[in-house]
View (tube, rainbow, N blue to C red):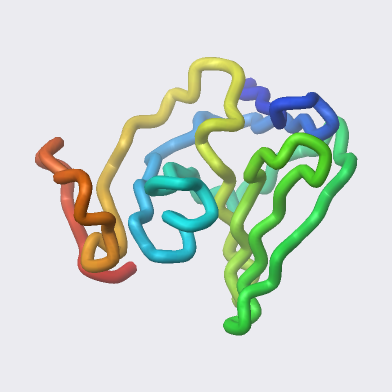
Length: 126
């Protein structure tokens, strides 16, 4: 069982399965949303069970994608694609994840202040 929460604890969840691969996204949206790149796990096939959900706020991108965060503490919670695809922020997880960084996406948009030198696969887009 994996558990996770936001910084203030208003939002908490459980996952019954290992987190699986963690993807680093370097797109402009993720960089602005996180202050750097985002690290997330895809959970659209096995959504988390929310123990608590409070103070939720979302930002809807013109594309229809949504980014959801805790309005109380500002913690990023998840990204929801237009097609319902759900990506949970890996930093929320409080317990060992069972996952590993698997690669980088949108590297064409990455900041110029760092290099990606971990040898993992990189995609210019998604």
